[in-house]
Length: 499
Ligand code: NAD
Image: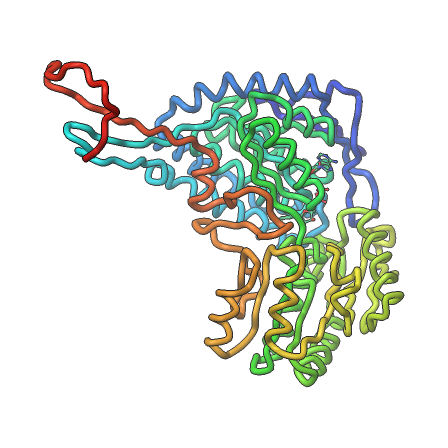
């Protein structure tokens, strides 16, 4: 039974009008489970018009009332955690436990956004000049848009919508066409929580829908997360059209393993960080960099032993460590990269290709794969594979390991494992990467800090969530005021100064 999905516009489910549809698969069995409408330009323009009207209503709510809507939303999502996680897992393929983490990390940003009455406070300087006070206020931008990837269908829409809504904006979400059902359910829950209709909309679609968003003058800001070529395209097009843009792209995250690290602990952590969610995480560790040959030999032995024990299964199997990839194209891409690695001369230690899962023979499964003796000139090192593949690049010393992370074109996350505080401090200060873990393999910052990669992992100057998000989703107005007691002065022809 193939369900037909909708858009969510003006507080209602709206059928697609373009006649174009995309397929939503169940990656466990490799079959289409739903059809998602792909909006055309006229449909997107209608959503934006609706959102522009609704935004005026929403911006008139005082900040505390807006926070109460978010509080109610938080409670509704928590009540539905189990069914939302099952829905998410059924379209994405990550395990149910991991799907709950996806939703929970999104909710943590909603919790942060509930502090909006405090976060929106402006500045005030009394008597900045004679009888003059200066103050600033933060005002919503209007209608803003989020364009989000398949791999965190709850977390990333909420990272963007939470702060945007709290600041008084209306939000148009264009989620990934691969797993749009959770975003659609979140839209229903926002409405139930008391958000006025039209303030949070979901418009499904592909390139045409995205381009309509990028060219519409009523959209004031665009937040994107996805692959680097699309991030760059969206950043360039949005900013050329006068919009604010923050666009986060792909990654190749290194874990530097110093000789003094506890290698059993490191191996355990790298297994989760490398293979969790089948490696389909922008903060996955895909490169392990042991320092010194002895560290490398010991680490590879420990990783190999653990990789062989991993259990790959259906995403709803509670015993599975990770599930299928999201689509057939992912399986093809990962298998191609494994062959490329072999051809380039890397040593394939564990080959995950050709894995089948009993009872789910047509699912999009690839087993955990481990390469050793990868070098910096190889494509399997330079390019994002986005699958369950960990590559080991052996470094002669600390400086060589640091150089690898610094010189890679991506700069999303990085980790160092060591017991030496001096090395860790030096690394944190010098490494050219946006998010750093010290004995922490996936250093996704908590909600009240900000998330953002450097180099070709991020385009724009403000990060997601945390204080940066408030700056991104508001414009600052600065007021200079004087209340003379009657008009005492004559006209002034010299520019006023504050001396
Ligand atoms: P993607 O770039 O294929 O798609 C992301 C979004 O862009 C989707 O909504 C999609 O519909 C849209 N899109 C795709 N092609 C487009 C085009 N030609 N024109 C306009 N819009 C287009 O990414 P994905 O496969 O959904 O997600 C995986 C990628 O996202 C990986 O590269 C991963 O590293 C990255 N990612 C990055 C972060 C981060 O914070 N840096 C977080 C999660 C995922």
